[in-house]
Image 1 (cartoon, rainbow, N blue to C red):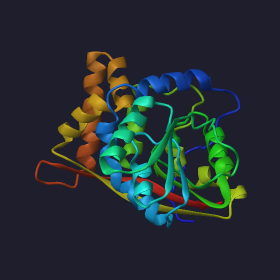
Image 2: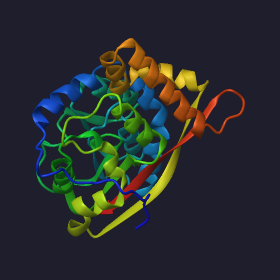
Image 3: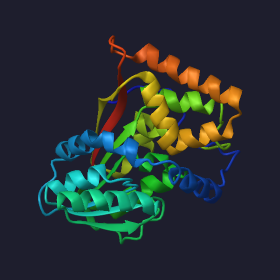
Image 4: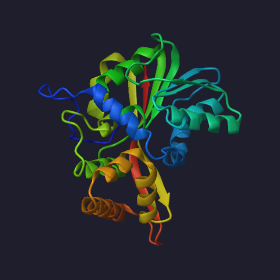
Length: 282
């Protein structure tokens, strides 16, 4: 199994039990803030790559969990799969439906919680999520739901940011200003080998995890920051929470991080962000 290495702890401590219901309510409000589709649509290539790595076949059933604005849903539908796309934010499902209609793709949509999927056991050939299910607060429950609804012999496909990649470092930077709720594990834990082994290893036939790079290409570092603080819910909420001085400091820290990683020398932004592409044989 090939994955990015990490020393991050992947289990919730026994001493602090997060209030998952309250956290989830706040998360829904967060993802309803801004316009995630403005960011999500740029990640389309990751959904296409995941479908290829999973070797999806026409006619197979696909469940997209926490599908957002539909990147992997659309990719699977383009391969003539029977797709059900879910999310707990209706506005994101509406964006995905608009995209599917524009491309003439058939996708069924259903509002659903990744930790409590409204489907029977073992009904989907493929269960997928790109940068979606990793944000579920109760990580063990979300992983269990992916396993539950996937058929024996089926596949689970995921794309998750790693702790050491650009977006993983953004999470850490923002967390220094707006700490997560006590006891809550980082979403980037989903991009580590220990997490995959803990939550899937003993219940599946095989796990293939491949580190990949998504390249953020923007007009400039300032352009990236402006777009993300305007449309990406977690950053929108972080800057709303902070006072002016702290917000200015966070912005400068983010620009400094981008500057350290930027491969462009012409004033634009070309920043690789590592993610883990995971294909699990059920």
